[in-house]
Image (cartoon, rainbow, N blue to C red; front, side, top):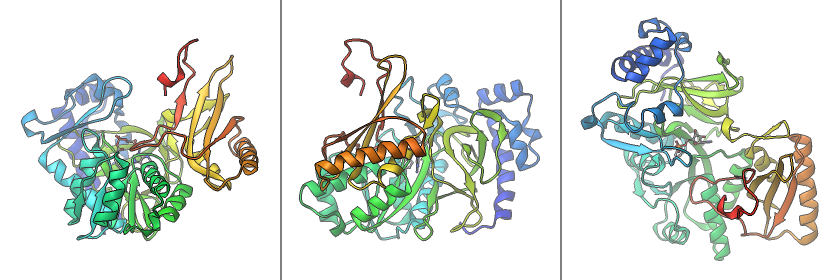
Amino acid sequence: MTASRDQIEAAQLERLQWTVNYAYANVPLYKEKFDAHGVHPSDLKELDDLAKFPYTEKEDLRKTYPFGMFAVPQSQVTRIHASSGTTGLPTVVGYTAEDIGNWADLVARCLRLSGVKPGDKVHNAYGYGLFTGGLGAHYGAERLGATVIPMSGGQTEKQIQLIQDFEPDAILATPTYLLAIADAMQKMGLDPRATSLKTAVLGAEPWTQEMRRELEQAWDLNACDIYGLSEVMGPGVAGESCETKDGSHIWEDHFRPEIIDPFDASQTMRDGEPGELVFTSLTKQALPIIRYRTHDLTRLLPGTATPGHRRMGRITGRSDDMIILRGVNLFPSQIEEIALGIRGLSPHFQLELTRPKIMDELTVRIEAREDCEADRRVSAAAELKHAIKVRVGSSCTIEVVDPGTLARSSGKLKRIHDLRGLKAGEDPRDKR
Ligand code: DLL
């Protein structure tokens, strides 16, 4: 964690050379792609040469479903995970025993940086199973020397009971699920601020500084970010310091990040410039991944808490989650940021897209806070509509609804409900 930038870059070059050679020799798809692109592993002489290599997309994993991109025989694959795959085939990823060990080390690093200590009790509310969140966080917390409570997601009342009875020091969850737990506690007349929790390590979905304040205030704890994706590893690709709270540090001894122009992938961006995050693994054995396009939009910043490793800015959204409303680009995180600055509005909202005639329409449906009176609801709605128009440039309809009426998440929350493809007579609830 304390290596200098020069030491890290030297290790990166060596490991990158190993990775491209290894992938070329062991994964037919990489050989085909490199050959078609007119590039050979021996062309990688310095770090910037990585830009000569072709990208890998989720589609490549789908094309080779289920195990075609594995670089080791199945007998050496210790574990398999898969993405939920709401559209099309799931993406399947695999790990050797050494990959699992590295993964645990990196999650342990993230947790320590976020303020979790050996001996702490850690309540793990990320979903267990094919999703990488549960088991990834679990092994990392064990590696750190913590006592893990493997609760998984859902069963909110049971979560609350265990938090009260087992008195954990830290909780691992998606930000929207931590919010849902707080909400459920308040409804039961319990105060989340009175629990033993001191740290929350939150990720798997975008969240804003405003949401951090909301959660820290609701629970009286420190909330830090953890980032990752299954194709690259799972949680723990990057983690945030509880001292600086200024974005997640990418573990650059294991991953080489790049930022590219999402609309013109031939362009790589300089540090500080916004764009799409791309990762190349440096040590992975079962599934080496080269220039994987994450579709996550952010930028690279100099390291602070761990100076040798660069940070990523907050993820503003995913390029494929971007709403284009009459030519204006909009992300759910922009609505979150604006709504949480308006008195009387809660962080519980959803975005509904419809096409009543020719034009697309956006409805922001948002819950009022418990203490928000009827006339305040009207003025809060007007303020939100105005702020979205001024700050984002979109016109939309606002519906302020009663507290507790919108669906809660127990993992990644689906904010966007796209009803534009609905045929006449179809029940929109089937699409939600
Ligand atoms: O969500 C891994 C993970 C689990 C990360 C638990 C952190 C905590 P996937 O299901 O493959 O893996 O989804 C990866 O989730 O490309 C981002 O779009 C989003 N994402 C993950 N972490 C963050 C974060 C896990 N901290 C996709 N901030 C990624 C914003 C995040 N988005």
